[in-house]
Image 1 (cartoon, one colour):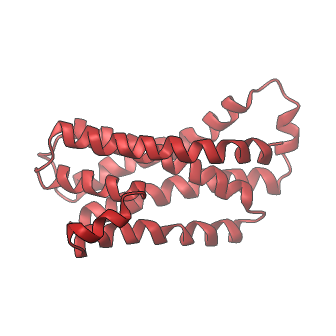
Image 2: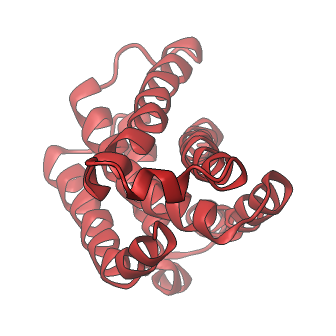
Amino acid sequence: MEVAGYDVKTISNKMFNKIGMNIVEEKVDQTVAALNVTPMSRGTFVLGKSLMGVVFAIFGSFALVLLTGFRDISFGQLTVSILGITLISIMVGFIQGLNSDDVMTAAAGIKLLFMPLAGSVAAVELLNTFWQRFFYPFPYYWSYRSIEGILSHTASWPQVLGQTGIVVLISALIAVVLVPRIRRGLE
């Protein structure tokens, strides 16, 4: 369903933009160094920068689903799926913000990150199941499948929990790689 794909892209775009651009603004204003000498922990900083992007993405996702006429779906399943998407989006938003020195570089990097996202949507919509297995490492493949099932009323709770669990697992693996870079970038 195109609406489901649009929903996943909207969530990711808002998350990447909010988090990544907030970090770039801190770097441009040279306030990251000042934040390091305050009693605020890095966890508090990460939570503060992530909170607005997460809230905006969740609110925007529900608004988009309601505005497109999907009122009789399981909003519990949708919430679980959206929360899974936010984990990967937070990490990618932070790493993009820390690797960019200005807003234009961050925006360009964020747009390039849509290649795996668009590929995952195309895989579900255009490829048979044999070829889809090559997209299993992409968390957006599993998110799209979950949201597509929810919107088409074919998803069961075990499916949504399983697909979201895979997204969380992939996010955890990516976090093992990215968290040290995020820490270094905040110093």
